Every structure is written in structure tokens, then in C-alpha cells.
Amino acid sequence: MTTPSTTRAYVRAQDLLSADEIRAITAKSDAMGWWAIGRTWLLIAITFAALAAWANPAVFVLAVLVLGGQQLTLAILSHEAAHRTLFQRRELNTDLADWLCARPIWLDVARYREHHLRHHAHTGTELDPDLSLVAPFPGSRRSLWRKLLRDASGLTGLRRLLGLVLMDLGVLRYTVAAEVEKLPRNGRTAWDYLREWGRHFWPVLLSNLVLIALLAACGEAWLYSAWIVAYLTSFSLFLRIRSIAEHACTEGGADPLRNTRSTRANWLARLTVAPMHVNYHIEHHLLASVPWFRLPQLHRLLQKRGAVVPVPGYREVLRIASSG
Image (cartoon, rainbow, N blue to C red; front, side):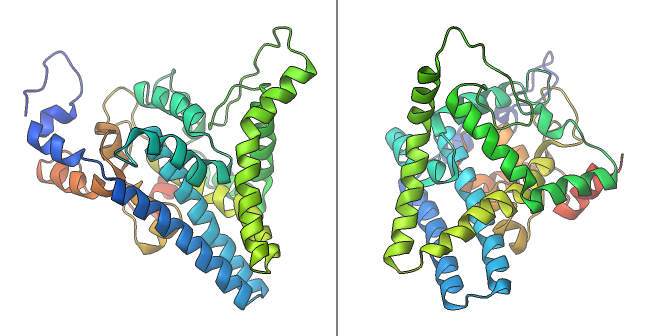
């Protein structure tokens, strides 16, 4: 471990961990990457099978909740691939993760990586591209409930779909935040926009057609409706709660111990809003090269060194976010 700089207002991972500890805790694993993806799609398959076996409204709602959590899991695995920590081999973090994790939920690892690394470089500052996700907090309890109801009703999801179409067309700059930026036309024709749209959208279309074809081969193509409903509702809801927990109502500045938050996650949170240890967000911002399955270990090390205090649960975070 090094001595914290007297001119720097925040600590780095090197100030808290030895070189050997950092080397061990940033070790990646292809096997763990395959296991994470396989486990996620296995749970998705089990959910579809359960809905096919017990096709009633109550099971449909339960399936939508589980599928929304697994869609968020695919988003988190895409996030890991963007950091090149899902797999040890570089190509698996680009091509494989893109097809098995990102494209089925209309993400793009390459474009997301460019956006997300700017978030890490400028977290909590005016240059943070994700600042609009947490700028409304803290707000009133009524305001928070309105946002959550829009998510659960599908209104947020429909708005996200429109944004994705416009980003794929090249009308809007790519972002996963709430604030959008219109791109200059620069002489582009309608055909130019359509070609841009096709280049970005065909992998999304193909991956979803494969999913529909697999369900149809089992004689249950209608199950895809639960995937769409989950994408528009529970996925949006879980995505917002996760985002609030990570950065809402934290301090600004460059200190990763203060500009982000780790959150306590029970089994239900891990199934819905906090898959793949994404709740250890201080740890992730302190050392973004740590793969998902080693984040609990890093959390324990930081606890022993007094760098992180006991963390709140998701209910407490929502209370903080609605205390304005």
C-alpha cells in the first residue's frame, strides 16, 4: 500500500490495498463468465417453462417480475463486458457478451462502453453523462412514487423504446441516461438514417427472433409476450431502483468512497435490483477492474480497513431519495 497523496483529496485503491491484493482481486475468469451467462439463461428458461406449465394471470405476473430481474442481470453482465471483466479473453468480452447479454435487451457493448467509461471518469460532476439519472433526488415521496408507477405501468419502457429507435437511426446521441442530445443532420438523407438504423438494430432483431424461434419450437411462442411485458415494466422499475441506490443523494467530487453508494442486498434484491453483486458499487468505482464475483471480497477488505461503513438496504435508500 502507498501513502495517500497530500495534494489529492481522495484515496485510491493503491492507498488501501497492497499490490498483491490488487493483483489477486482483479484476476478474471472465463469459467465464471460462462457460468454467469449460463445461470442467467437457465433461470430465464425455467421461468418460461413454469409459465407454460401453469399459464394463469398470477404466474404470468410472477414470471414478468423474474424475467425483469434477469433482463437486468443481462444488462449487468453487459456492463461487466464493457469493463472487460466478464471474461479473461478480450474477444469474449466483445463479441460473445454482445450477442448473449446485450443484444437480447437492445444494448450494445461497444457503444455502452464508450458512454460508461465517461461516467467513471467524471462521476458526480457536470461532465458525468449519467448525472440526469440521479439529479431529481432527493425529491418528494409523491414524486418518487410517480416515477415508480410510470416504470411499473410501462410508460417509461415505451419512452425508452422510442429513444432506442432514434439513437439507432442516428437522430439522437447514444446514451443510457435520461437526458438526450440531438445529433446534427450534416446533410444526411433518409437512406443514410435507415442504413444507420439497420446497422445497429439487426443484431437486436436477430437475437430476439432466435428467442422467439426457440419458444416456438417448444410450441409456446406466446411466452415471448412475457419477455416484452417484463422489458417494458419490471425491467424499467428495477433499473431505476438500482440507479437510485448507486448514486442518488451522494456527495459530488472525485472521491469514489463518497460519490457512490454500496447497498445491502437480501435474496429478493439479488433476484431483482441487485444481480451479480452490483450492489457493491463503491467497490466497483474504487477499482473498476475487479470482476463481479470478487466484489464481496473487496468489500470485506475495505471494511477491515475502515474505508466503508455499514451500508443501507434498498428500502432505506428509497427513503433517503424521497426525503426532499
